[in-house]
Each structure stands twice: as C-alpha cells, then as structure tokens.
Image (cartoon, rainbow, N blue to C red):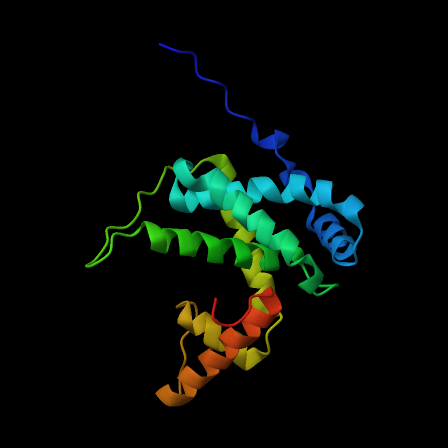
Length: 187
C-alpha cells in the first residue's frame, strides 16, 4: 500500500493573512502595483481551492480555483478601492463554482445533488470566512434592502408587506448586493 502524503496543517495555510492586509493588497493591485500580485495570489488561492473543493470535490478544485483567480486578477482594475476584497472575491468564486456545477449536471430531468465531502478544518474555516464576508456585504445595505435579503434567507419574518412590494424590495436589494460584491448583472 503506497504511503499517503500528510495533509498540510491548517496553520500553514495563508488564511492567517488578515482581511485588512488583503484589502490593502487589492487596493494596491487595483491601482496597478504589480508587487501586490504575489502576496494576494498566495492568500486567495487556498480560499478558491477550498470553495471549489467544498462544492465540486477534488476532481475540479484546482482548475476552478485557477479560473477564479484569473477572473479576479483580470477584473482587478474594476475593484472599488476602499471596499472589502473578500465579499468581491467570494462572489466571483461562487459564480464560477455555480457555472461549473451547471455544466456537470446531466441534461434533461432532475439531477441528483453533488456529493458533499465530509467537512475538513480548512472547509469549516472557509465557510466561516465566507459567511462573514456576506454578512458584511448585507450590513452595507440600507435597512429595507437588508431586511428583504434576510427574509429571503429565512432569517427574519416579513410582516405587513404586500407580496408584490416584497418581491420588488428583494429585486432591488439583490441589485445593490451585486454592486457591493462587484458582480455584474446577468452573471
């Protein structure tokens, strides 16, 4: 039986790069500072691989992560300086993962859900970080928009609002959320 390679310890991953450092690096890269590329790549790559592995499994994780990073760095000049980079990054990553998942689904009929690998410490850390990033983006919304998004996520009830009004609020809230996360409409 061949010897298995030991797994990297969680502490050896560049998740220890704090969010303020990532934001500063992305601001610098958006301003054209090429020296920010390597440390930003080093910090974002494991996050992209972690998301892809958690959603799609090992077979596609590296390829999807590479595509995510290409998209992030190709769109660096579009990044709004002063904003948090992780919500923007995770929006791009989630879109790519959804696109690959759609392509993997068999055509015609209902597809079975993708197998869910058992959570590793890396994927648990990634999930917590992603939730924080989304929570921060929702917190940037006005009160009505945030309430509509939270109601859609079944976190708060929506009382006393006509269904048509609620649908319109949700639509507007998602549009604002896309702007905050840096995701163009239609993606």
